[in-house]
Image 1 (tube, rainbow over the protein chains, first blue to last red):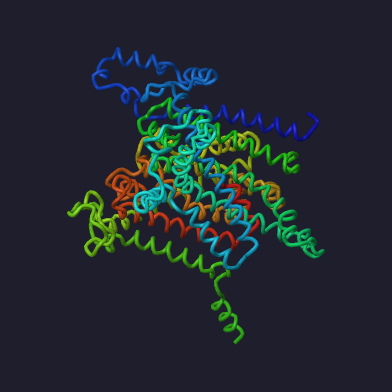
Image 2 (cartoon, rainbow over the protein chains, first blue to last red; image 1 turned 135 degrees about the vertical axis):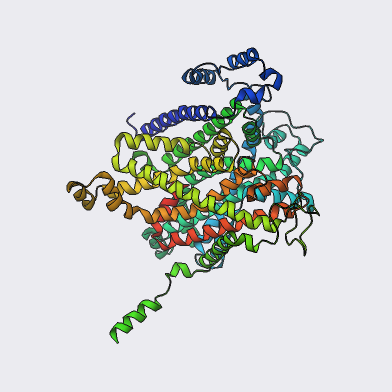
Length: 341
Length: 291
């Protein structure tokens, strides 16, 4: 425990665990605020008229116990991998989510890769051409990127590229007539490559392109703006001026002296951007009928499916927590100053 | 002569440089235009936004400049009246977030110890969720209505202000003039209000302006998902949602979406300018923390 890095790691992991417990508490409390009675939402008119059936249903779902006890039951279940049973699909929430999480991770993963490549490139170009035409153009583009309503852009993209131009395939993850690739990771693009099914790969990539690009526009805007200011700050440093003054080629100065320190904070922003991508999937999945967590969350919330809502909040919260933990640790490894602060 | 000269100099003083940039001018003009539309919608709108007339789903043309929706309502009038729903609610939302988040953050920073711990851990919990997911769960838990959607966005929006205000208050708390005020026997409330508050308002204002766009996107997003405005309210997000079912009639969703885009863009142009006009270094740090 002498090493500052080990101390830093332990501290971050303990915080993450505490937050994970907090997340279970938040989802539990929120879903218990519901003014609508879950009994009324789930039983038919005739069953509601019979007090015995209502009492039985409440007892079956643990709703007759005091709230703290319900929470402990919920927590105990979670530790055994039990997220409850969806009141709509009548299947374990874990099974429902196991089907939808890979679809969302594939979509958000593709979007973050595109965002990182384009966002960082645009940001560097804007900083190097500061106050000139490329900077002005990219500034407007990135501002439009963070200002456009994702759900509307999804609709416009669907209309233009699928309905009018017929460049992209329609909704869903793969062509309707095609059998999905065998399940390895749940990511259709990876699974089809692993099983050598090139037709499925092409179809999966085609279906992924439009929603991923729509989703990425916001984070491209975010990363462009952040990278631009990070690079500008480093460009003003004395050691950069010194490197230029001693005659180092522009390319060497840019890659060795400027980009390395400038891109370290971008790691943190990329983690935060992933959170906004997870948020965006809810709005984009609804339009592209992408069978992911976003669509599942929406359906569960509108039908007051308590265990499913809890499951989604929990899983997305924990995924986001893990990503932020990885980002922080990575940051601590790359930048030693962070470990001691 | 001397006095006149001085007077003249103050009169011709030009706007600060940042405000003369094209993006700032565009932002101000577009934002003002929407405020005028919101105020004058009953005069400007050519039709009753709720009146159902034939033909339904008419494309944009002379009778209905932006077409009609599936119930035969005039989209131009609905977009104009929509400004009366979305813009005031968004502004109210941001003001409430600033007040609640700012007050809690100031208390956390000023009093420290358990007050700080409680408030900031609560904020950390909210930050542990992606915003739309938490807002959606809260809105669903409270029930689908525009008021509840506002409340849901409020729940996810206040911690950013709390965190920033806390940081700023921590910075000024130990300054000599604050300490001497306390030694003179000022109450905590007076010290916060008189000595601390004026030092933290600038950066908070920048954050709030940049947040107006985000708040509108979140609010209309919830309405789009059916968790906000109820029919027949001409709320922009709900109008875009109505276009999903008839997306071959492109005009139903396109125009309300453009309305959201232009308002958000205008406030982001303004916020960007405001940020540049104030100390760029502080402002950037604020934006980073607020992300």
